[in-house]
Length: 122
Length: 150
Image (cartoon, each protein chain N blue to C red):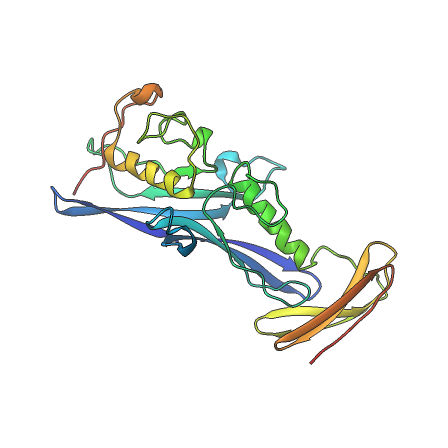
């Protein structure tokens, strides 16, 4: 069963939900003829928008604990300025949730990431 | 939750391996972590070939691999693939039997097993029948044997 993480904004007295789940599914982005292997990955998604009110957060598909699975552009962790792999599933999920909620400035920690506004409450 | 379905041709059953994401305290990690954690709980709904139940596996990191698998796993794809291999092997689902075999199946406690009298020129054959609470099996290369218990 998926885990619904509720994020409460003290200043706005409102909350948003982030859905975290582990999937065993075909993945459209990596599907190719003769390569229809079921993929195993974490999915992090939300119906919340960022403060620009323009776009929904894209779902995060996380296949491992390092490399392209790091929160900032696949090069750095969001909380710490490090390119090291996450050591646990907990670190992986919490770092991505942190990045979703707080957003990040362009090229944070020299990651090359583009600007992302924080999550919008309410 | 991710569910991996396995169709067992031997008895026309559909088995599954559940991979569920959970969040909570892990007693084994309390001394070091002292907090709730995200982890995967991997459980099959079928049993080993000898009738015994599989342990429930808890995965916190890519080093929590299946018994006998390479640690750490490269990614979650490899991690789960290794668990599937482990369960399939321990349940002896990939073994084949000769075409002259006869088979019957009995089921108890939510799983099914098959028994057969067969000989095989390759590998081993084993047969077992199980009833509630007990099971036994024996096998030897190139010969067939059977046992039953009730």
